[in-house]
Length: 343
Ligand SMILES: [Zn+2]
Ligand SMILES: [Zn+2]
Image 1 (cartoon, rainbow, N blue to C red):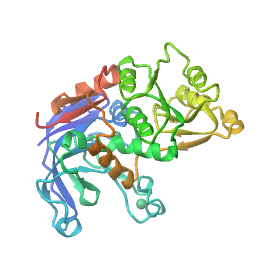
Image 2 (cartoon, rainbow, N blue to C red):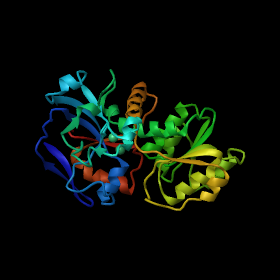
Image 3 (cartoon, helix red, strand yellow):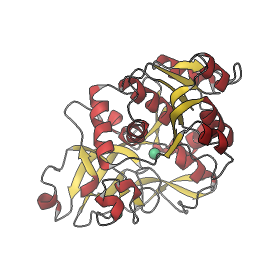
Image 4 (cartoon, helix red, strand yellow):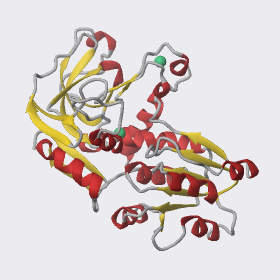
């Protein structure tokens, strides 16, 4: 089969690889679409200890089941060959305290498809049957491939708590920022401000109902405060993860407000902790999605409640390397790149 193999920093090659075989509790999937994730861009640059070359990346995908392991008909009778599925790429043990709490994304023994084992930038991928979700009737695999990033936004909105009639701020209009903005609006937020340096991405945020703040033109914090009678926003979401965006989120959040930290750009950075103390701001890390969040994301995509269209770009698998480069440099008006092994 054709597979896109990451071989070294900034080196991605289309190769012939052996087609995987489903173990007893796995399914074999023919990949229709696999999205490029921001975390994979840093992996591609070699900035990420989780990913070791040579590796087939890809954890945001959907496709068609083409083979079932011997135990699957008993374990998951709802999974049949020919069915369209997406897969929660975070394998979990089911036995640890985090798993018992339903926060399987925090499992002590978690393993990521496309990092710890071969991912979906290939014609075929094997995945544990327990992680597969059949796509709802009428939902195509192109949209189904967005379930993983949408799951991250569902988790962010869950941790944000009630936001009805409250003002919110999202910093960063990459896929997670754009989806979080929509989730906050879906939950009834009054206004969601969105700050983003890239003009094309900021326009997407505005088209999805956000109030755009261009940090080159206005001070993000001052603008958010001025628009809220000096109070600040009830919830801020940092979907970038740099020192400056983390600081801005604290400064733009009102007394007793909540800050959700999602972006992982910098491993550590200074935070204005005294301001957080004096205003009793609650900061929460948000990592990936629980299985329940993942299922909810699929449901919301099926309803058309959240989207990344019309800014999705489909590219053949062989152009994957070029798209990694372009996403790092200047993506332009592209919200998500989906690699399609068949085209
Ligand atoms: Zn991802
Ligand atoms: Zn576990």
